[in-house]
Image (cartoon, rainbow, N blue to C red; front, side, top):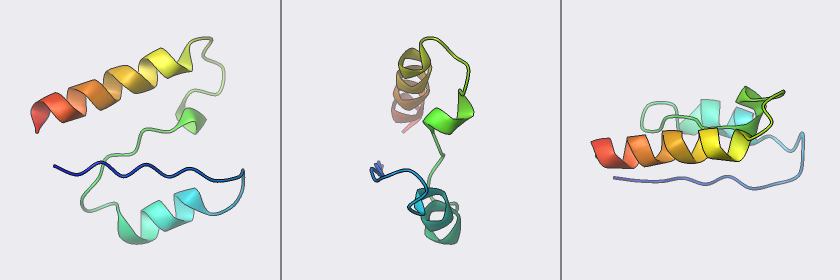
Length: 55
């Protein structure tokens, strides 16, 4: 199991980097997927926990 965490400034190329090299091995969990969610951190943590539980 691998977990890749990309942290950088806005518009610095995180999504492009993911698309070019990580799509085959990783599932994205991005704040961008929850632009209007009040508690987007909860949603992100739930998705991460589910992915880790699956192995």
